[in-house]
Image (tube, rainbow, N blue to C red; front, side):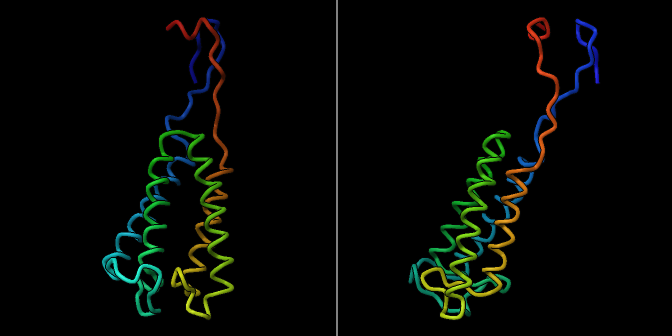
Length: 152
């Protein structure tokens, strides 16, 4: 804490929030998962795939790889500010929850067209929970500067 010109204490604002850091972590993980998926599946049979096409136990196909890369890139972009990170968290929750629900219904049938299995659906649920954390993690806000402080 420091004193301003008016003699009141100010709380320094963090340069980046926890939500921004978590967005970066989620983005990197999803980006790596998507790229690794393309190393396994290649680019053919876009919505097909077999349960043997896996990245460390998680079934993938080219369509799911694209989805993971897009979500990962959005996570990297969301690191730019607290508000984008919160919106990313909301989006990650919605997409993760939808993929979990779809996977829960289709995992026993091969999970077409995303080639989902139970471990993949569970991971989507974990990403949905991470989205909730990103969206609602508290941001320590400092005192709003007055006009005298803005001149310095």
